[in-house]
Image (cartoon, rainbow, N blue to C red):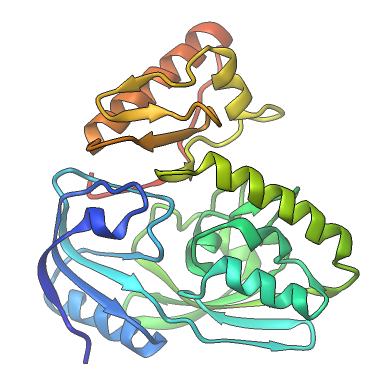
Length: 284
């Protein structure tokens, strides 16, 4: 039986450290508990939002009316080149485990702090790789029942899928097909990528904020506008990576959204490029 808590501060469940109260919140540790929590929200006629590590999320200052489910279902198996994982599995941990067994395909996630479920929803990627290249199928909860979706059902696009802003579809578990290979060179790339990320993501951030425009780097574009270090309230564009917004004190969601709009307006005025947020917004 899952423990449903009331009036829980969401800033404690976001790497941004931002967010008002959730009307209800529970932490689940298994696939079955996740389904139970979703069923409870349906019976109570409540909206629900499933989160993992909270590393790519901006919660509203007003919080969330409904049930926030913190997904910590972390079971996974590696059988030859087939990997099956609950949606709450830490992406970085799974990536490293697969590489220890000489498998390539999830390697790019070694420096990504989120969960597998979030990675699939946002088609996470790095090092010229992304989730869509190795995902075979996923078990999803939709309309009160469990379904199996194939790769094509997700409509993957760059840092996107058709369920990214559709809370009615919740990923329960996933199946990946990887390839055996020499991971030595990749380990060097991952180490360099982790060092870069570690320096860039110091403090309270949600990682890369905007999607890269086609053929361009959002970070380099924002940097060229001279915006590193610019801040609104306590929301600041990182001095280390211009596509990272940091909460340098007591920033709220309004500060972040105002800064987002400011960056977008500057990019449009100078380059006629529309920057699109990569992050997931909840409670707005």
